[in-house]
Image 1: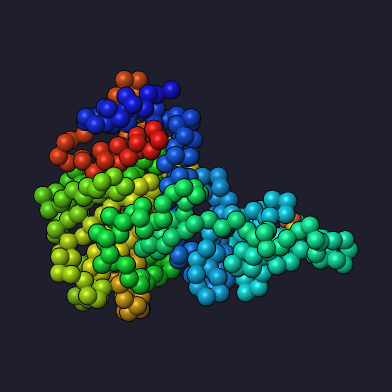
Image 2 (image 1 turned 180 degrees about the vertical axis):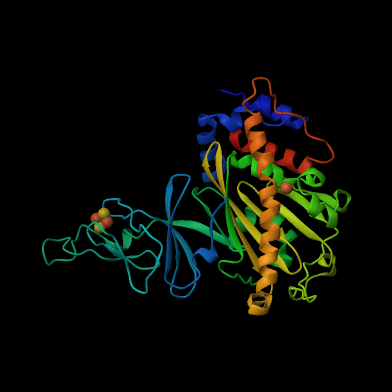
Length: 377
Ligand code: FES
Ligand SMILES: [Fe+2]
């Protein structure tokens, strides 16, 4: 087993995490507990359950979860496990205006997780029993928080609130805490990448690779236009001072968010919120990416684009929306070969974590320091 103190000392210098952090099953499961379950991590999008009554069962790192939008539009996350005999409550995505019924013995729950019906539980025709207190048997509800349409949860009762955990980040981007508009189908994509989830974070944090991996992007926003975003330790990233809006054939531009401070006129920022959420903001659209670790070597990247105004969802913007989505999909696809290359490279016998550029890769180093710190705690 690796010595975490040693790693932390090395990361304090210029070395990165050792290869075991990318190829060892044991470390993958250690990370699952320390870097996910004890933190706030992204599990889904509000757009996965757009309508009241929408129910979406998912499995995240093996945990069965139920994303639910209740009758008044609030989002809740429950364990997708019936309180009776513990079977999976919902198998498929659906909408219900009534109760959520367990397929096994038909115990029924409201969209807010309360146990409402326990048919024949006291014998045939008797739907109650004194030993079963319905109000104690609601679905297990997890603490959740939605920001930029990402549904974050924590599995730990000791974790501080999302607002205090991520206060520094939230105040940095408070300008974008506004309603967002999403168009199904043309503003989403998913990529399956053969690498450990951390490599996707590490690559997203830094702009050093831009000239070689993203030549088109580099033509509009050059390496020297970028700056590092470094924090006290829960996020990092990069920004560009040369953002220009995508333009349609007839010169049309997406409308911008209202009341944005002028600093966003030509600035865009890209932040990894540790552990698994990648976010981008621009004056006319934002995007959110959830990294879903499938195994130590496989990650799914779920991507959504959001617009600042409802009118951006109209037909007259359809081709521009498509072009914008294609643009970002290309950027994320361009990164695949390098992150998969880093994964393969970690099978080498002598690789020692590499060396970070002290100037260009501080955001990535901050992420490694965060990883080492959480694993040690
Ligand atoms: S396991 Fe759900 S009702 Fe029995
Ligand atoms: Fe990239």
